[in-house]
Image (cartoon, rainbow, N blue to C red):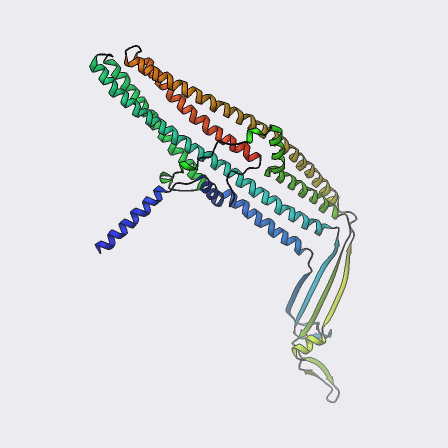
Length: 455
């Protein structure tokens, strides 16, 4: 029993350890979010609804067929529905029917309904794609924020190690009489500030993990982590393209513009459907019917001079004897219906103009967003390059300050200022680096390059 318990414990520990060691790549994060996001699931259901609507449109071309059956009683003096005789008795009867109909012409409304249904499926697919793209961008941003916070925390920890080494070095200098003993207090304050910055960085990292875990709908965010090796590259030729080329490519590939144009075609079909109500409609109908009676049939007996009641004919014999058919055409010519058709056409025309304006607005938005993204990316690149130069200069300045401090030519306050400036420069390099990466990804996204390769 103890061995079984030991095996179970070891298994549980290994599973827990594996769960903690799991590190999500950007591709895994995006795929998981797309699969589990509630808004995306709603868009998928909307797509299913449009597919059902298309089936409805197909059904409009098909004939209708309906069966009917009834059973009833007549009491007192009444007409037998089978014999048409007036009788003063209870009549029990059944009737059966089968009726079908089909539209021959309906002002092309059925045709346009079908075309609209196909366009609605395309529009729903665009809407689903747009939702997936928005989620992917949000996940990528949250993912890069975690990577930034990880590296920032690493910088803070490395700086605290350097502060501790500097403290030990200062103790030696104090013992040697090279620097005053009060410098130790300043170094201790610097170490405390460094520890505080490390705590802030740890909290920022935890909150960024929580943010991404919520996007992925993962409950155990404390054990959630991302892979450091899956960092997107900054190497991209996108800035070699002109802003006009990126804008032109975006107008060809952006989903929101495709969606707006699909909605415009749908609005045009709505106008055509509404206009179809001006035209006559023609339909054909066909029906079968039969009746049976359960009453005895009265007949006059000449030999006795009395009325005899004979048993009713068998069920299927009556069905055959009373069988009837009907066929007909129905023509409906609209003349006046209180301006309802006219108003409906006008209403759909107004909606068409609104959707048309939305297409123009989407084109303007794409031009503005792409141009903004292009200039922001160039600025982010220049900021990152400047930050690298500042970091290098601050590092040299700090090393120079350290050398001067150790020989007593600089006070501890100025040295700490130089050290703080170097730490801030390192953090700025990280910030501009990931800002540049994200802006490259956005610009590539507008250019039609996906964030990740589709499976």
